[in-house]
Image (cartoon, rainbow, N blue to C red; front, side):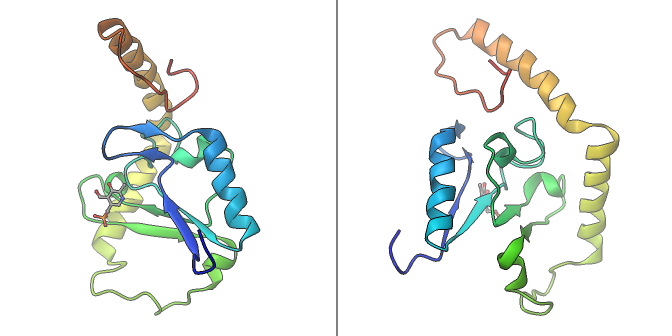
Length: 157
Ligand SMILES: Cc1ncc(COP(=O)(O)O)c(C=O)c1O
C-alpha cells in the first residue's frame, strides 16, 4: 500500500494454488488498514462464494464486510454470469450507464442467476454444504492423517 493505492482486492479463501483460508487476524488487519487509509476492500468471492465454504459468502466467517465483492461461477451454475456488489460510498460511485457492456445484465443469465439464488434458499444449500463438508473432512482426515489442513469453517475439523 502507498499513497496511490485506492483499493485492495483479495480472496479470503485462496482458490488457486491450493485452497488456503486466510488467517482471521490478517483479514481483520487488511480491513482496518483500508478503513484507516480510505481504501476500498474488494473481496473476490468468485471461487469461495455462493455457499462453498458453508456460508453464503466466505467473508462471513471472518467478521468483516467488504466494500465491494465479486461473484461468478456458482452464481449461474453453468450459465456464464458474473456480478459485483457494492455498499456504502462504493455503491454511490457508479450510476446506471457507467458500467455498460454488450451482454451485461441480460435477461437470460440474470433469470438463471435468480433461479440459482431461489434454489439456495428453498433447498437450504448452505446447510447441506455444512453437513457434507463435515462428513468429507472426517473421511479425508481418516484416509490422509498427514494431510496439512486448514478448515474453512468452524466444525469442519
Ligand atoms: C478467484 C477468481 N477470481 C476471478 C476469476 C475471474 O473470473 P471471471 O472469469 O468470471 O472474470 C476467477 C476465474 O477463474 C477466479 O477463480
